[in-house]
Length: 345
Image (tube, rainbow, N blue to C red; front, side):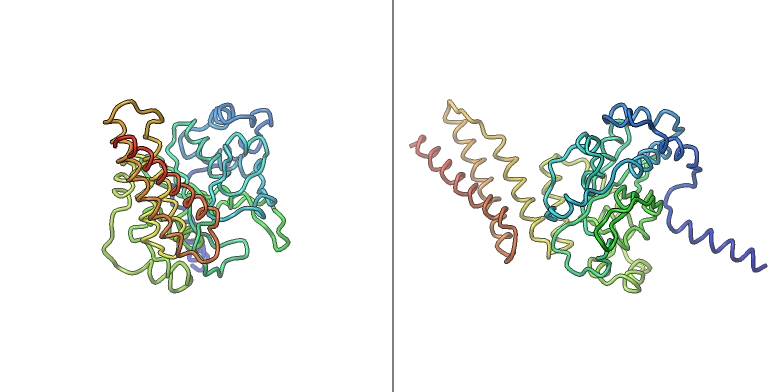
């Protein structure tokens, strides 16, 4: 009787780590690990090779996950230079060429493989507790990125970076496959991964930043509490139906509302929106109507740039690059407006 009870306990503990249906990945894992180096030169040929024996999308994303753990190392040098919250201009092809990346590179490559295979994937930026910062309390900027993937109509979470290994106390990368971060149970994943937008927690009731920071019993109590919450599937669907500009602003507003300590995310939201507005202004205008429309767009962009400047002013130490960028763009916008209005006189 004791043996039966112990077996049931072990099964329950293992299932807590997994959100996906049980699948035997032994064959696809072995196939991915034995991939000849020649297939890892570009996203197209790698996707075709890795998905060739897969019977379903679960096996396809598993093949991507395992291959990356074997072939992409963590870029410690870039990590040392990396500035949290800054988007790196690195493509999936760059990651394949170098054979190493930081979290954004891992997430971008996984995204690209999924896109090539016709599987929906999203890069999720957020805050993390790991690699020596389990007790971190400063969450004023995002520091990590992972993925959400939709299989058979259901969203799942995975972290290809942490699934591949991690840094030791000497800041050396150690490759070590960790299945815990493959299609993980959201209630387990949230212990060390907090997305900027609460809907990407994929929890029926999202937990607060306060509970995430405290962790332990505080987090578990909030996970277990009975609350009235929004349906994250409906939120994601509504978000995906928005235009690119609307999504950019909504993402920033959601993130700032959820964590008011992250001024940078809201400032960048305003900056991105201003850029999108300005990108629609014609460089050459030949009619009064075109100039009037350009003035209207420039005034709208200027208003958002000033909002960005106001939010950035709350950051006393840091964000100098953003502050300088916004200041120059405000000056250019004001000069443009002055020149266009002068033409109409």
